[in-house]
Image (tube, rainbow, N blue to C red; front, side, top):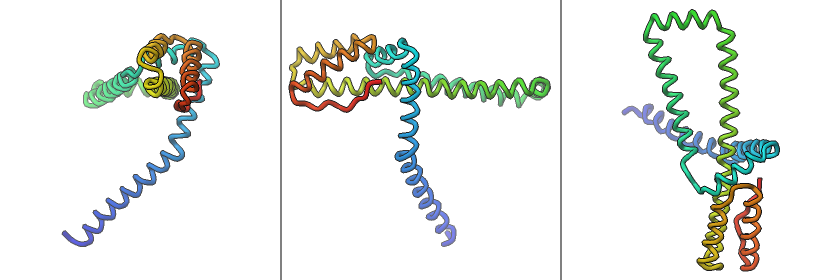
Length: 199
């Protein structure tokens, strides 16, 4: 192998590592906190309008960690794959391709407006879904960590009662009562619970 080729390969590897490091730092310092703020703000905005939405978040959190979000992402992936496969199949079939092209040209403005509308709807639904899922995860993580911190200090019976209280939550008010209860127990035992900011 020529030295010039080796130099190009080494340069490519070093460049890739540098770009990855810069991208990772950019994500960690700017994009991740910015997106977290956008998701949290969108959830708080919907919470201020709909009490059912707010209660639904706390009810879902009380169910613990589950794969609902992964199933939705999988479903979206399958739908997008099916959509692109049908476009590919249509392109291979000349008659169908000509027919579609003629219809598209006749109603070009309608299809363009529809594409913009669907894109906007997809973005709104993504923010709604990701923000809600993030809020549920924060509440569940905080609650389970707090219960596990308290467990050795309050005894098994009290721990099971508190855990039962958590799983019975169906609204924000019930969560607020549960949260007051675990904070009181933590204060009585001089314990620091994880930081949590209610929605």
